[in-house]
Length: 454
Image 1 (cartoon, rainbow, N blue to C red):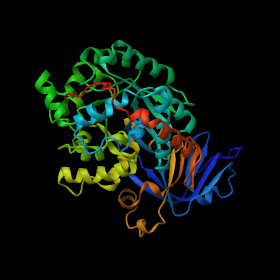
Image 2 (cartoon, helix red, strand yellow):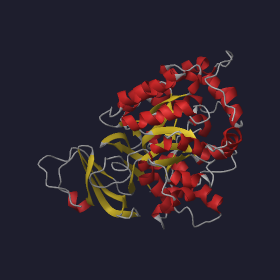
Image 3 (cartoon, rainbow, N blue to C red):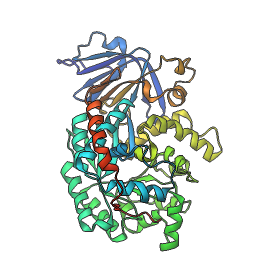
Image 4 (cartoon, helix red, strand yellow):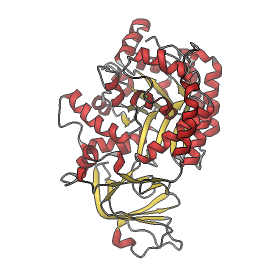
């Protein structure tokens, strides 16, 4: 598409690059020697470099040897948990929660959450992540960080039934107060923690509130097979069936992990009344030695989008969605016993349009096309580890790394240029966080925010 003849200069023109594009069937393609014209935070045109040579612009980026991709989306994380990175290592799930993470989280202050979120945003911007879905505590602080750093996010205030009705009320109040904040970059969700920590009464009330206020629901569900087996033994239904009978699946819902989804759950998900998506974070499943992974192929067969995720850095040690993209392809090949699945182009589809749909941004993000928000990353493929290029999709998924991201743009605003972060002072954040760590990680008090017994 040729840019319009506008009287005012474009806000940003990116030229001389290769652009990942989607056709009308959502198939991945690449436009060579291409240019992107951005105006008012939106992609106005994807055209040729020649077409924009004389077009005025407030800012230009010439990017030879670089590929422009839609900004990556981290579909499920707990950004402030970067403060716990490496604290709970080599532990089974139950000990990880009960002995380390939930005792430490009882110490959290809003300032701890803010600093962790700020460091996480810096990490994600450097890795080409432009949007993330977060589900945690003291989320006012996270919303503030998102606004200040220029990122995009789907945010939810997590709650347990053990907090009483006040927990659910805080989640709703947060969602309504911050919906559309940060110039529209913040969307919100109700965030019950999981079916094993939120009872049926609270889940049903959450479902009613979601429908009443037009909010999605973001929660953990069927995270692993043990949770599913325990739910069947105690209640006679799977966690997915719990979500159906409480009405959660009649709202738009983002399910974290789903490695415990059974074959019998698939018809339940197929008949869900709302948009259902699953966020998959394979690195954590490998680390916890869970026997299964997210059934990506089966979910795709019933029309459920699977987005890429990292989970929190306390379990994953990293917020690198680039790694999640490569691992998803490799783990799915192993799980299915089929090297033809999941291909590099399929992995890129999960990283772009499917991830955008998973977080409710299917109409505005996930591709570089006229009318879409200008969330763009530029990836440098001139390094020796990415040369020569025989299959550009395979090079991006299996050879490139997050460190190859040179520039990160959200809503047309440059957040990182040539690896220089422009919206986060990392040394200042790390310095203050280090001072606060002794109080944060103290477990001598014997408290915990919840108990994991599933």
